[in-house]
Image (cartoon, rainbow, N blue to C red; front, top):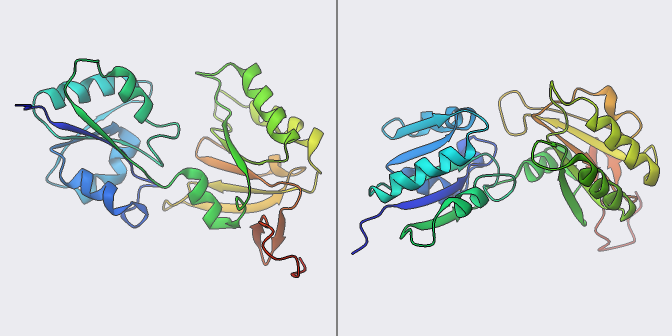
Length: 249
């Protein structure tokens, strides 16, 4: 009989209870232990005052997954949390990499609201058509490859959502990304800058591709760059899907 616990890999969305799925909240509620990066555990600890919470620092992702696996093998049900969706720049992939072929532990991934989805809802309807998400962090991906992806996304007229656009140690990537976009997109292409989406300090503004660097951009920012049909209406950024051509924009 399998006496191991279960691992829930949970996407908590932006972090507020209202922005979590019922399934995500229930998974954490029935877990014996919640494990995550401290910034994320700080967001949810008020909702689970009687649950053990283990926090660790950034760059400890593999160690965190190993710890979660050992806890589950000891019989505990464990929720491993990520902000947004655990399968989008989150912990789901690492958890599956860490678990061994002979480890008899069940893993269930619980979807969450991504940063792109949260940011898009705040500024209107900018991702109504084909879009890509690209992280500008070159800690795990070679910068030349990231630039190639930016180039191809711009050539394909995709709406582009940029994750991890800028940090204290990475200040030039967002500049190069803008330059690449300007090679293939008009300078007046609408761009939304959303900081701390879904959190208490949420801020946003809509600008243009030419002027986007005038806005504050940091690691907690999502940058949404429109396609050739994206427009701004009543202060909201909209990309038409093409359902009805009778409307004038």
